[in-house]
Amino acid sequence: MARLRPLVLVHYHELGLKRGNRPLFLRHLARNLRRAASDLGSVSLRQVSGRVLLELDGHANPEGVRDRVRRVCGVASVSLASRVASTVDAMKAAIECQIEGRSFASFRISARRAFKTYPMTSVELNRELGRFVVERTAARVDLHHPELEIHVEVMPAETFVYADRVEGPGGLPVGSSGTVAALLSGGIDSPVAAWRMMKRGCRVLFVHFHSVPYLPPTSQAKARALVERLTQWQYDSQLVLVPFGEIQREVVLTVPPPARVIVYRRLMVRIAEALARRHGAAALTTGESLGQVASQTLSNIARIDEAAGLPILRPLIGMDKLEITAEARRLDTFEISIEPDADCCTLFVPKHPATRMSEHEVDAAESRLEVPRLVKEGCDGASVETFAFPAGVSVAPADP
Ligand code: ATP
Ligand code: MG
Image 1 (cartoon, helix red, strand yellow):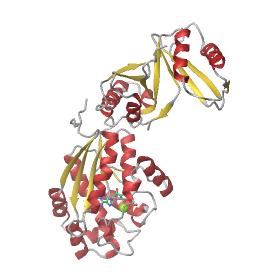
Image 2 (spheres, protein in one colour; image 1 turned 135 degrees about the vertical axis):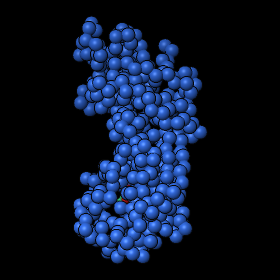
Image 3 (cartoon, protein in one colour; image 1 turned 180 degrees about the horizontal axis):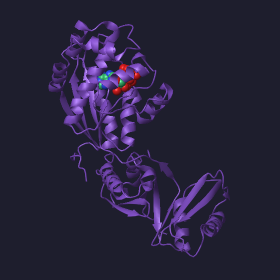
Image 4 (tube, protein in one colour; image 1 turned 90 degrees about the vertical axis):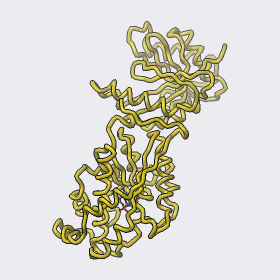
């Protein structure tokens, strides 16, 4: 028989739990799916009871589209499916198509009916279709550890049959939760934190503090490379580069060494907040993890929060370094993060930063600084760069 042209079948999970807001979340998901595959040929989208279907024209490469879709936040899983009429004979033909050229010693059929008035139950379908596979191959049925699982999803007007299911990131579509400003260093943690916020539906504005000309521009290059990577999940990004060396120099003149790290952080947070407000971001996010370094004690986190007028979200707070590193490897940010560089945190940093300071002590340490002027200088000196994925496709991040 003629090979059935596969279509890309997307399952979502958390979105399905939303009630009143579901159409809005689905609009964000559809927009992001379209954008992710926008350079791969013509793709049309259709929603079918809890799934999204991407139908491809003759030019689009199904595997290429699937690989893009598996990075779209909100997607629980994605498969290349055959679509047939909801008759047992058509299902068998589709199964034949799916198993063609594969060798497998064991398999199972997992049939599901999206409407319960179909004349056969899923158990009956599993039996009938299973028998069909057994007759054609040497494989046996194994319900618990099959080498191949063949999914059959029966809808009122059509049935989808697929064998390989690739997991997506899950979570919520980027754009559905608003915008956050991520403080992005060149390190391992903050890119992972930014991605975690994307996975919760946030569009991320990236803010990087550098110390050019006191230090070489390596940290900016790393920030750019990281943003370019992470843009694969949100399609359009802005990176704000803030000159921080001069500000640090002023801090060194008046603030005693143990208090400097916390004062730097509070200044970063104030500048990031001003930039966030300018760009419509409703919160800040950092890669802090409790206790990982001296500036990340409960006491110091409290002092940092006191400097901010927006919530500071810390998605990695309960993760340890190994878990964060594993995630950075999955995201392909790890290799960029471990490139040697001297970022502003290595400039003018004392040997023994305080791990515990009272509100009063921090206020005293900052008292000789002109904080509003430094914040203004940071914001005024900032430059903005834009990034797009797929490369060359640039659409303003529209909110429906
Ligand atoms: P990372 O691996 O993300 O650099 P870290 O473990 O080195 O984190 P710190 O140096 O204490 O920890 O930084 C804590 C957080 O402060 C970072 O995760 C990041 O969000 C923010 N931050 C630090 N340095 C910068 C910078 N130069 N520009 C922007 N944000 C920064
Ligand atoms: Mg760091």
